[in-house]
Image (cartoon, rainbow, N blue to C red):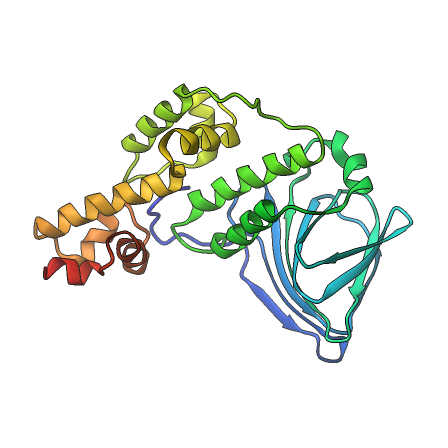
Length: 281
């Protein structure tokens, strides 16, 4: 939800951090409030090796340091460097660090219906590939997936990631030619929900366009993502409230931001000064 939400809970369960000591594993794992993502996992492995196992989800993995060696469909594979790894549901695999210093990885697990089951075979045949754009988007999703107030940005990244994965596996779900109409309809919808917010999934249902199509159409037409547009409009509203003498403590909520730090971060990014400094200008 692009919302300014009140006392919202960021996760369906608390972040769990464990250190296995001699086992050589440190994990941070949680379930985010982002439709389509079952779990997020950040891990540092040094000595632990996963035995053969299977998930009922799509596993999207990037390695930030070191390398992973794993077996999939009776073939030895590897994950490292710029590679993006996609492991399909219901196909057993194992995994272990392929470097004496271990590895650091970031993973999220997608609900099985986020990609067609017909792509499982293609994912088995090509489970790891270099796609720097996709890797940057995955990294960007990890950066915002737990931040209060950034839910719409996380939804946007996820829509772009799943569509690019489909295209990578030979099953692009969107046409190459983009209609301009969805961009303007989405802009009007965002304008109607600047303060209250609306999720990308809800916008998709209202406008009857695929979420990724809405993002692509909007970005191509206006040169910025829907999320960036909405944030800029909220900053615009915040500056007007500040200049109108609104108490600083109420500006964030009144302009649609989650809290004061959320407002300050984006206000300074766009205008170069904090709300406090702006009010004294």
